[in-house]
Image (tube, rainbow, N blue to C red; front, side, top):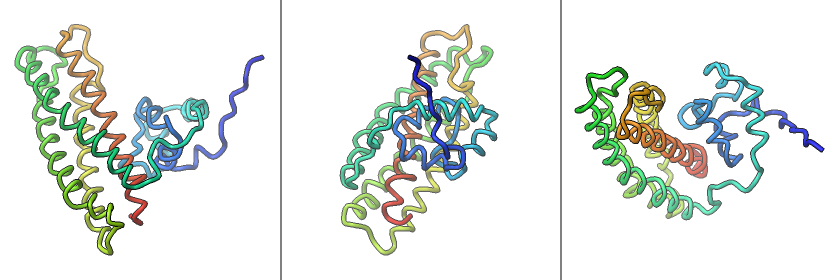
Length: 223
């Protein structure tokens, strides 16, 4: 007997951020359909889907098909901060230098070819510097404050971090445009293809990172 897929009512009117925060696996669906669940996550799903020209029924069906399980984000704030630092901060510091190296190589060798990501290395280099400054401020100031239970003025550094997240989101838009959404041309060499695979993976991780902070961690402190 074929199981009938029941689409959960209410997805269309819930914010993208709320769905991402409460339904494990939803972020992968949103990335697939190019729906912003971090910086622009306050929009209702129907509105976000319409803005991207995607099909609401398809997105709702994919969300409904996800296994309902406990949210990936730890309930304990110290554990969540540990996850952000060891899983995401460490990954960005590890991956960005190699992506910059690959981008410089591709531009040097293939910069005159159609579809070459000219300028990508510069964008990645700028983003790496901004992210390092951002993560250092979190690790040195904001996260220790949170581990102590918060502070009456904590909304101010959280607001600054949200603003920097928006800046990172703008960098991701530039990267998407320079890399044709991470899809290499048919004539691309292996280095070029590796670069685009790496930028796609990096974008996924950075959006997951921003989502955990904007929509899970920061609200625990009333921000």
